[in-house]
Image 1 (cartoon, rainbow, N blue to C red):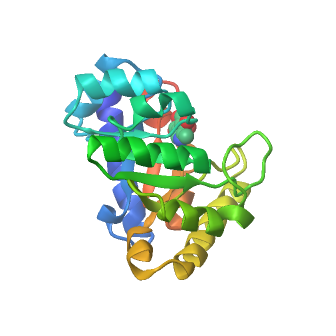
Image 2: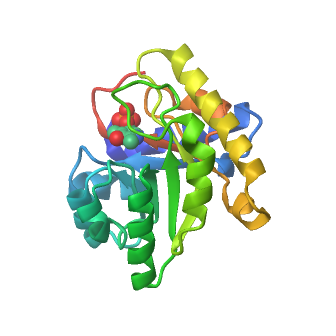
Length: 230
Ligand SMILES: *Cc1c(COP(=O)(O)O)cnc(C)c1O
């Protein structure tokens, strides 16, 4: 099976899983994380019907956005301040906001470009030291401050679950969903309305994430790697 076929399979599985969980297939967006492949790999996924991609490096999102400007590019990687000017013009959504300085710079750059940048706030729900993201206890205040930054629209939360431990992953997804509900309750009505996205779940654990309310799953290896088996 090639990338085109694997994309189609995963896309179908995501829709079926949503239905099994009593949700609409349209409620869960599949983001194909193409960071391990080049333009040919992206082309194969496009041929399979893929319209939404994720990248974690500024150089990669710039190159791929230039080659494929008609699909969506989501930035899911570590943000460096000096690369924000490169990322914002390409990104439909930035999933990994976790510093207020970055929020302000993203907002400034977006305003210069005449756009409003959709962002998600990355939360380290599991508390693993190796993971980035703000602490859950700081999330309400962080989101409220980010909502006040001109040029930004805060759309929800993102997390990376612990790998290799389904119970721990599920707990992290459940925790992120509960935190998002709590935050939404503290926002003004227009901010709460926009705050409707939960980016969680990767190749190993996306069905659990959908069961816990993911609206975006970020799937790389299951689509782009020949050797991935659940
Ligand atoms: C690489 C990556 C993914 C995809 O991971 P897979 O295990 O390959 O599905 C998802 N989210 C982020 C932030 C990543 O860096």
